[in-house]
Image (cartoon, rainbow, N blue to C red):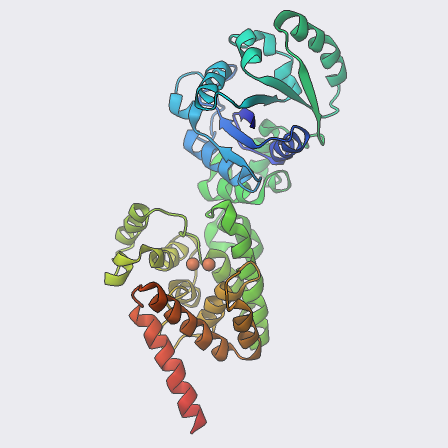
Length: 398
Ligand SMILES: [Fe+2]
Ligand SMILES: [Fe+2]
């Protein structure tokens, strides 16, 4: 197995880092890629106003999460103290003694590899791969360093060509404060920076347009859920447009509907406590329902969403009696967005395309059937939603 190891301060991780990781994955046919945010870097102190260790780890997860086989490790942060690459390589080698390790680095790092802590041991434990970006002076550096590294340490450096970096992290921190860094960052990272107010960025989260909200909303998600939320947004807008509902509200509610989904049960319960919204009996039993409640409260607290959007998020897992149009739109969009794959989804899409209530009724019925099959309890609000729709159907027929 080939494991790539890409360390750095990642303060913040930017598109240059992501492109480099992708280029290395391809060029070296890596089976796994470990992203290793360092603790306190040995060669420089973190600038003031920087993200802390946890924030850099979280941004790295958001930035690299979409790359297959990439995973962010807190190895160096956990080890504390100065981060020496040689210690990291030893730890990875001990955990995976059979694996072929590939240490990835920028050409600036390669230029001083001979000055790192225990360079002989580094090159004994790992192959070295250096990114070639076509920067000024790079060719000359390689010409000078490659023979030196080979003769002094027996290092055979593999060069990995990649697109030139648009800017460094230092430059990006400066541009973030000026509000011109978005194009250099993965969308969720830019959202996270705004949400946490890093690097002097001040964003009023209560006055965002849906476009401005999108990166911030994506920063709450596990990378694997991004496609679902964007699909829900697209579907909700389509449904809203068809029904003459408020598109902007549909977009906002869809973007935020799963904003607390990735939280653990203790984190969910802490939010319930914070917002004075205790879980009901069934939510205690089935904590996967809780994110609708905590998400709605968080959306109101952090983004000042109105009652209509609050309701659409609040009822998107169970439904409820006499749902508003926006609540129906979000409930259905969540069930039928294009990334959804489950038996019956096509039938549901057809029903929703025909008539919103018909689609909603079928979606609720499918939920009830699924829960019955699994022997899981059915929330009272789901039953009420269904009874209400069926009652309406029969009275329409009279
Ligand atoms: Fe959800
Ligand atoms: Fe969802």
